Structure formats: structure tokens, C-alpha cells
Image 1 (tube, rainbow over the protein chains, first blue to last red):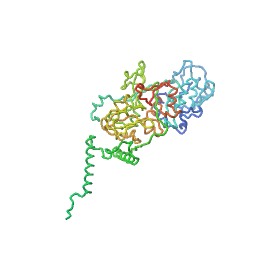
Image 2 (cartoon, one colour):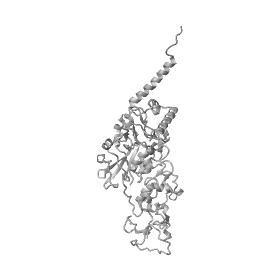
Image 3 (tube, rainbow over the protein chains, first blue to last red):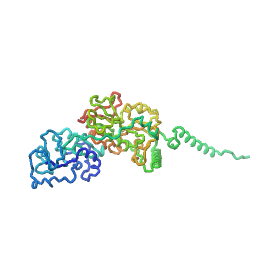
Image 4 (tube, rainbow over the protein chains, first blue to last red):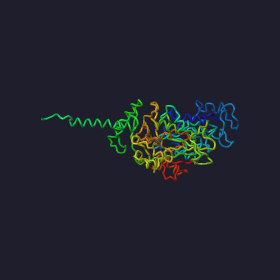
Length: 187
Length: 303
């Protein structure tokens, strides 16, 4: 019953620039340097949710569609999500809050919005979370001595299949012999 | 009797001056192999010896020349080093996937020649079994997808050494290390002898064998005298940590574009900077440390 919430990581990577540019004022870069920003104060762009899918409660309203806590293969909806994340026992409602589908749920039962999903990821990946907060893990853009743009974990790692997706490399350099042979070249 | 003198002193002097001007232009044309160099350019001194007024006139001349050549405004900045800043760079070998986004973003930012393309970053594909063994490095890899199984990737560019061998060998002092740790080249003072290229153990310096071919549409007009301003034929160029960006507080272009966030940049003198965190908390090494070039470019393992 997991919502098809997130674009694939490769898509997110390709569109990174586009996402950054198209972000509204809500994604103002944080003012601090590498200072571990207070968890609630960390400014990040909006999560890369599939367009038109949020709020999840427009379908999962708890009335017309009751919560089915049984682990099963999804067929009616969200069939495109293949969960390749951690042990086989993991499933949707470990992270998505069953009572309020617009939120995620920490192991403690605390609800967190999608905009601070790094809190959820950081429960298991504490070392990565620590490095991310100081600006070592993940991409930072902006100013080395001023405001920086952070990204959420899910901008690069599809939470349902988090391995960083392979990329097509850009063109290799020309071999010296190719440069000489080129007609009208600078030589 | 007063006979009018044939050669009036002023006239003679003027004639000589004229002659000298033409001679200089002729020598300039002969030496550079092209008639395009102006005699102001030919007589320009090393940038470090220029007075403030001379710098202004040099910049004005360059901007005029670029406008004529490319048909658009090209700004040439001379932003000095920021006080209290020494730049450091760290690259995460456990994250780099070898996609070469940095290589091409660098070319775009720094106005390198496009044909043939001069690239300041060289990404090496290395074998995991061999580790950092440059004998097993390949820079021409071109698979469908990276990273390839059993391989890792190591981008190499100017290491901005604290003891740069390239500076030591330059016979004319056309290259030096600035106060913020960036080794720069005065393209107008460089004689193109390429000693620095022979001295650099990282292959980080590149020579313009021909007139750099840079289409007007591709010119990045935001330039710095020591950085990405369009270069003439016959000079050496190199990575400057995007001096035109970093001295304004921006990240270098390669940092901005890296999709994996492998590239980290900052002020080594700021104890709260990202680069200091890397140096203090991660496993770090310098490339060819045994040569005692003392790079300010570090490789680390972020895992």
C-alpha cells in the first residue's frame, strides 16, 4: 500500500539542476556553513514526489480505504515499486505512517513530514546522516563561505531502491593521435 | 649665414620613435609567428610588476580585444586573494563514479579550446584489485554505464601544491603561487617553453599548440585575468580552482556539477569548513606524496 511517492533516483539525479532551479522560495539555502544545523532548522528542497500524488490522504483517507496491515504484494496500485532496501522483512508501513499517510513514521512512532525524511533515514544510517549534516556526504552547491543548498537523501537515493544508479559517462578525451589526424585542427 | 638645418631635432626624434615602434611591431610579429599581437601587448610586463594604472589599461585592452574577437562583452576581473583563506580540495574516491560531468563542466566554465578540446581534469579508471596504481590507469574508458564492476575512478587535476615544481622551473616567472594557495599563470608573460609541463608530476598543465578554437557562443564572459579569460596560442594553462568563482565565494564548477557529491572544497584555515572536517575525520591521502610537492588537493574515503 505504499504510495508511489518517489521518482527513481536516476531521474532525480538527471533532473537535479532542474529541480534546484525550479524550486520556489521554500527551498532557500541554509545560512550556516558546515555547522551541524539544528535538525529542525535544516533547509532542504522539496522532496521529489511524483507529481499529483501528494497528499496521499486523498486516497488513503482511512474511510473509503481501510488500512490493511497485512504484508502482501501490491497489485492494484503502486505495483511499480520494487523494494530493494534492507532485509526482506521490511515493508511499506515500517516507514509510512499507517494512520496518517501524509507522514512518515520513525521507529519511536513519532511522525515526521516528507520534508524531513532524513530523520527517518538517519535512524539506521547514522554515520551517513552525521556526514550529511556537516556537508561531507552528498552534494552541496552554492557558496563555500556562505549559504549552501542541501539535498534530501531521497534526491539521490530512491528510498525503495537506494543504490546510486549507474550513469552514462560523458565523452572521453581525444587521444593524441586523433588530434593530429583531425583535418583543419589547430595543429 | 644661417642655413636651415635639414634635420630638425624634433623631426629626427619623431622619426626615430616611429621607426622604433614599427621595429617593435615587426620583432613582435617575427617572434610570435603572427602579426596580430599589438605592441602594447608585446611590451607588457609581468603582471606582478604592473602598477595599478597599468593593470587597468591592460584589462581595458584585453576586454576590448575580446569584444572585437567574440562580439560580446567579456569581463576580466583581477580579484585579489581573500585574506585568511587558503583553499583546499578533497575528493571522495569511495563515491566518484567516473561520469566525467566535472571534466565537461570545467571546459564550459573555463573557456578552454574546444577543437581540439583541452581538458584540465583527467578521470582515471583504476582497478580495485590494484588500488591506486597509476600503471593500471585508463583515461579513455567509455562503457555504457559507470561505475564498471571492479573499478574505481580517480579524477586528477592541478593539486595546487605548496611546493609547486612547475613554479620552480619557470625560467621567466610567469607562474607563481598566490596567497590563497592557487598557482596561477600570467598568460601574457608565459613564453610557452613548457618546462612546467615537464616538471608537473600530475600532468595538470596543458599547452595551446594552436590558436584555441572557442566559438563566441561558448564563451563564458565572467572571467579572471589568471583564470578563464580566453588564452592566446602558445601558452600553458591549468586548473585554478575556478579562481573567478572561488574568490567571489562560489564553489568551483566541478564541485557544483558532481552528481555524487564526491568533491569537497573550502578554506583550510577555517576550522568549521567542510574541508577541515574531511582532513580531521576521514582517511586522507595525497597523490605522489613522496615527491614532497605538498598538495592542497586531497583524496579521501568517505565511507
